Image (tube, rainbow, N blue to C red):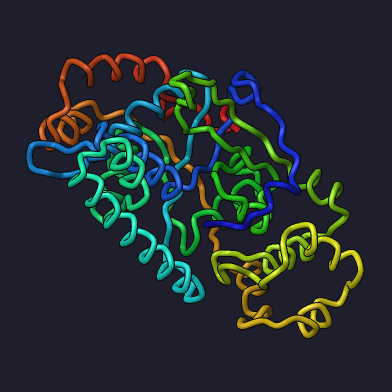
Length: 336
């Protein structure tokens, strides 16, 4: 769900050549859910192999990642660890939403409404533990570094960007700013074309949001930005406070600097201090990135042998990878 502050935040188009030579920490869950929801058949059915195993996430990784590498970008995928207990409420909401979407999808199939089926199918995508593990296995076989976060991947991405282990964070959620990501890149792993009404396609460009610019424009400190998020709702208190949107929350923070006074004057059903401390002190770890060697046999074993990918198409992508993947002996500093 994420924090809904897009209307307050300035973002600028990024040209691909601006990202050339950069490494970017990518929230793996965010990206894999994008792939499983968008890479589907016309009736909404996810791509599967002959054994009924979903392959949409692998198709997405093996097509988008080489494209990024060809542009000189090194993605570092960061996988979620143990989520804070506070996140259980939003997880319950998501489960309910998926159940409703699945019911509507089934109804659309019975009515042979392919368009509606395609729409609702995207709303109950899922990633199993095995799918996450296999995605990480494929990335490592491609020679790319991966990171296991102790808790939230977005927080780990933000920390790595703060420490200049990577140039910036990649996500479609604005929570990254609350975790302190100095640079947030949106739309990096989306398809570069999106279909709109009328059957036309529009180009999708990556956007850059810089935290220092956000704080300067809104005249807020980092702590105030976190409180603003809590007022309007985060993954730890979905829905926020009834009747308070981004603009009203910003006005409250400009009028009152004492957070305790702000929340004591409002009707809440959550402990704002607990949420605030979660954003401030969520577990993160120092990491060193290691580029591996591309393992062609392993890639083929995962894609061709396990999941029925066409060997010819895999070979075509491997040819691209051979000319773009960082060689193990090269310094990672080249990519930061």
